[in-house]
Image (cartoon, rainbow, N blue to C red; front, side, top):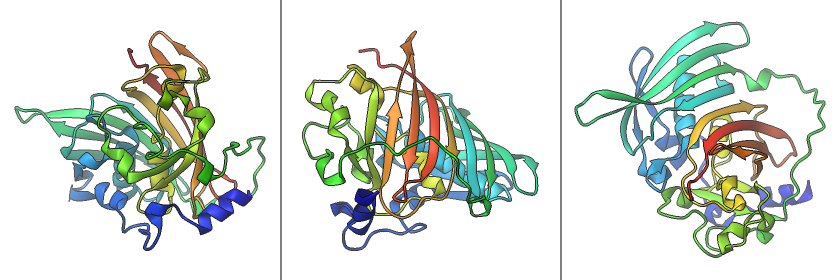
Length: 294
């Protein structure tokens, strides 16, 4: 796709000059974990990745994904399923991992992130089961009917400075992301939601770091929720999120498409696709979330 290639050669303004690199970026530092003992890692949840007052679920998933990548013999997340049990807050945390099975091409593990209550007891925030492999060992054959989302060129899309706050309330995470929304899915920002339950846009990290398999775990949960385009505003907490990483992304901006078809009983699903600058489907996800009560 011509526009993707052009944008890869001309990164957004936040990335101009000296973009961060994989392994040396704010995302890498803020998802770092420190081995305490076998299977146990210490971590610090950064306030820079909060939405309103809660820590973003995709950021948390990437942090647990990093711990599992160290605990398991295979390097890359293939399938990651997370249940969000209680809201996480900035501050210290501990991640406990367990190797469930190891094989020649795949390994499976589980991990839980805990924080501390005022009395010092551990409170479990999120529990993950994941299968890891080696993305570089995958076959090249692709048979698919999936197509990249039709999104206007990046310069014709809307960023955080193009109008009202993209996410109501205090959202530090917006300063760490470079999101440019398709105007067709940004009517909610000016009080004119489409009612279609769709969200599309270009995605990158604000410091210019290219995407890798780990950061895709953040990408699938980084755009504003589709509930905004359904005319609902407010926190949309994730209950469960399953992500499939399909291949290692090429350098350059990503395109993300998220749809909701059914809001019922106070819950909605979100199906996300992430496409790279080489027009490859690099990640897919589905999550169940609680709809805003407004």
